[in-house]
Length: 499
Image 1 (cartoon, rainbow, N blue to C red):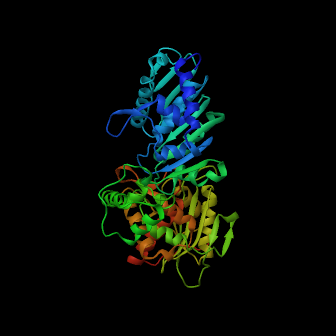
Image 2 (tube, helix red, strand yellow):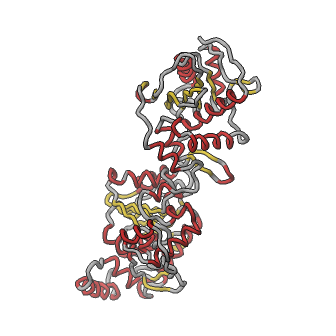
Image 3 (spheres, rainbow, N blue to C red):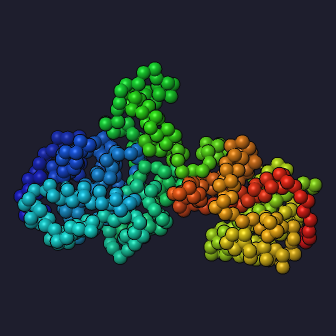
């Protein structure tokens, strides 16, 4: 700081400390000397780097993504380091984005506490505030600023030039997280530093895609398992299981740490590996949100056969050709109904067995979707066409009748098409779940199974695709299996024009 005796003294101490301390960085030294945070016991203490914070500080780059267990201190450390950069460099804008308003308030209170516990000569001199409200701290002498925002504000970074960006708990951001992140990245100055961090929340969504694509984007990946936190210990476990012995040997864990792990198993059950990650693969697989048994879905994904034929540029996949004398269903989810909207999907299923024979996923108009459905119905021996009449389904049905002259169409209570409602959707989802568990070999498409993996339960019991994912192939299959169940339960011969 300009002319500050405190900062000059710190600089002298820093040079001495770094010369005699292996692994100590400038950021670690300044954090310990300048910053105060509340510990687990509620008391104020210097921000002295723990094992996780030390490793992050030593390995961090300009772009970082952090996958971690709960309560590891990453948010605190990044906030502290970015706060130091804000108060030691002119013209700096730091923005931290939390997943909720409440979390944003907590982060801002923590950073404000860091400022309040700086030496009085700094707070009353170069680091005097002109504003410290609405989660915003402005330092006019430096022309620098520290902001904390909520991801619920989709315009959080619009119109700004950000030097330091921290995105916290990205896996839990509301709305279109990818779009919010894209807007923030667009505001990041060339050479700026960014950190995305989160505990996992299923193998889908913005954070998962960022983690998996880190190699392509050049981001430094940091993974911190729960045992790196010193506080995560309990009464020593006795009579250790084989998996516990293997983990102790592989990671050098103690019996007290295994005791803590057993407490997690009792408290979190199947979500233990999500909330308290042990490796960077299984932590994504465990989620309480997915509607289907994740292990069954992924086991089938690992063994699905390659399609025998690809058409329409790979949009239409065919595994099983039609067999004379067998009955088929062609089921369609019309989705957004347009070349610029959501995908439409078509599933071809054998009535007797439920086998998936072909699948189409493509953006198309309702007229084109009707043509494709009719063509597949003709190819598969005059199949029954079942169109979900939600959204643009009525248009597809109209084209099937008027343009394609196809009347072998499934109807409910005399009305053409299948109507998905809040009343029958839970049954459709449950049926798919049972089939995935009991007869996973019915499903050939990795595309379909991927949608099953990202089909989740929302608040209030609603179900649907996770943010950034699709469910059109899944819903088309759910319609096909629902129609098939009705036909087998009370079969009535269907007849009509086959074109």
